[in-house]
Amino acid sequence: MLLNNSLSKGQAMTKKQIKFLIRAFNNECEAAINKVRYSNFIQIKKRIIKSFEQLNKMNSYNQIELTEYYLHLKTEELQLAYEYEQKKARGKRRVASTKRS
Image (tube, rainbow, N blue to C red):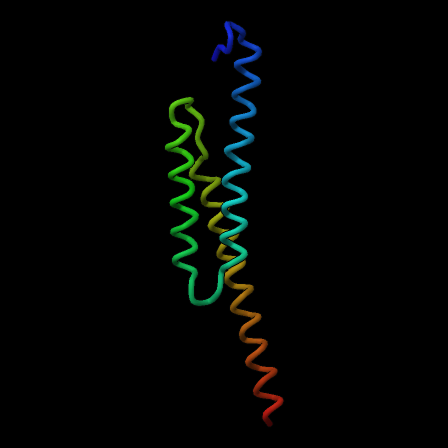
């Protein structure tokens, strides 16, 4: 890609766009994953997928896209956070039941 008839400037701009795309997706995922609870897993997963699709669509003009594998890794991260939340909830229930006894 050329920028002002310069290949090096075009390559630098492309690298910056790639970094921006990854940062945007990572921030969106982090915000979503931090909100996961036992009751909203499906909604959070849909939010991550929608963000993935929208960011790829916005960057399709310059042929930059996130890979399906990267999406898979983020959904795995979500699954782990969800399982952690479930274990925390189980632990709280156990503590509450032993206090009542």
